[in-house]
Length: 117
Image 1 (spheres, one colour):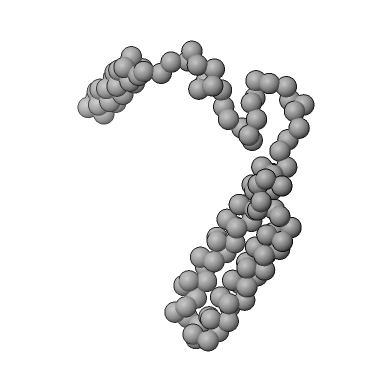
Image 2 (image 1 turned 135 degrees about the vertical axis):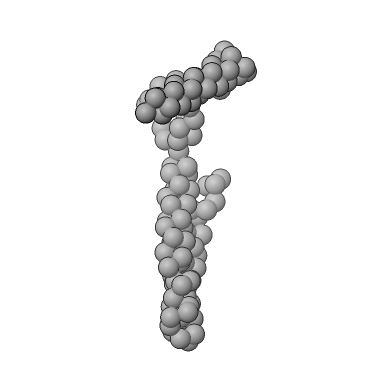
């Protein structure tokens, strides 16, 4: 039991020493306003909160989220290849990819992908 307590204090002392060494040797400088402020949603958080929000930024974010979720839905189809016959697997993939292509064509037709609208 005493050995465990000694090890705990030794490890705690090493961790604290390394943390203090990292704090002393770090070269962070908080004098720059741009580096110390967070970047959120494409606007400066230190300015007025009533600035109009960029609709293009919002649309690109939504499109990214939609395609991100669709890629997460593609992953379970891959192990299906070994359990289902090839023709059914191909039909499922073709149907899913066609839905993605139709959605992308609709977004392109509505000029959602054009940043300079």
